[in-house]
Length: 327
Image (cartoon, rainbow, N blue to C red; front, side, top):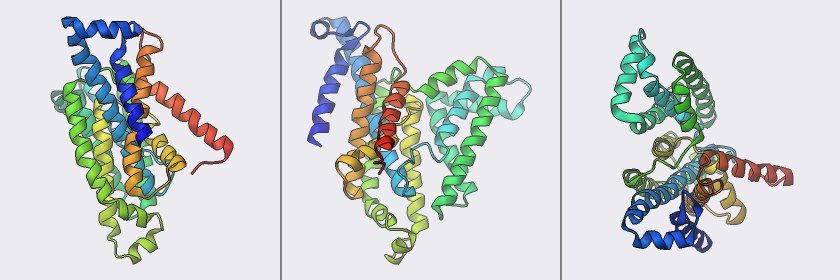
């Protein structure tokens, strides 16, 4: 945790120094005394840096919850249809002007458009998870819940592709959303993300002992007197909220939620109470590192942060598979 704290501080300072010209310590010192540049520093770089930390923290927490709930090291936060639901809502908003003749689509798109892309993505993610719960008939069985999430993801993904076919101009916006970006994070996003993390993390830690019991198997957990359907439902709600808030602010940032719990299990194996907090911190550091690299590698151009997280996270998992050490 000390190492993660040091990395977070160092990356936050680095994030404040990365501008359109790449990394520049002398430029950063000049920014502090130049009033206009200091405004850019305080209104663009600082909220983006803090927002990247918080988005990564929410995704790391959601990944740890998903892997604990399904007892599967390959589970990720987008497993229950949240990603496909958010993508579908975003495409509906972007395609709203091209949906003439489709009464239901027009009404839905108009309602989402009034909410804006951020709220549309959030509600789309929650609707995707709700559809999964309905299809799985609740949260009684993990396997049925997992399969329902896969089905909902495929169906909503197909619907999203259908609307991009009807409205090709929505394809570019969908691509930006699917690749993930921290470039639109402002102070409003920071407060929303902070409220989500502050609310979700204590509740997750409170349910950590139930996750410890679930890791022993359903029969063992039930023999301890746990109300498994109620606990699974609470975990699914927390997972959906963490994922929905993160996705609504940054799009679909891949692999952060999948890799963070792996790193915790590999280097600091422990009970879920610590693993949830540690995964949150690892996710925050990973996404901030990817954001700093995305801004500085090819400045003044910027790489999609989701591409970097996919490359780094996928490379790490491939290395684990090669060494035969997947947890």
